Amino acid sequence: PYETEIRLYYPLATDIGSMYIDRDIQFSTNGDIEKILESNLQNPKSDKLIPTISKNTKINSMKLDRGNRVVKVDFSKELLTDMNAGSSMEGEILKSIVNTLGNYYGVEKVYISIEGAPYSSGHFALEKNEYFTVDYDNVQKFE
Image 1: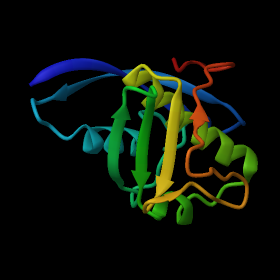
Image 2: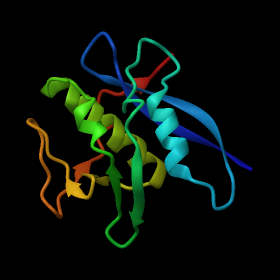
Image 3: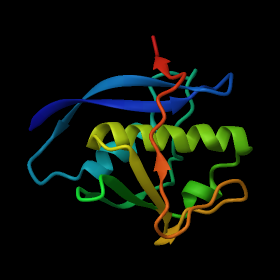
Image 4: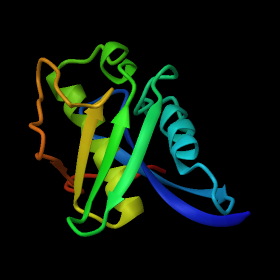
């Protein structure tokens, strides 16, 4: 397997904000990066960080649209149903997902859908061709 470093972003457990962790991952040719990312987003290495997605949340698909420099990711409905967060925390969760995928693929835009429909919660909503933008402001390395 190929070993590479990935930067993962997580919301803070005690405050509104997020931090990142660099982790080494092993990836085989034709391997399933969705499962590797899913597992890592579900399991931060500290209880001072909140899992970015719940244990029940699955990444259904992920696609890099090189021409438009956007990553398109489709999650299972549990991303929303298991979230149980106010608007500030939901914003940090979304920021962590967007920053993780944007950083990994080297793009600034991430389109998130749920079971094929554009992301929509009580606090945030995307239209068909809208996307979230990577935002590294006020994000520090977790020590």
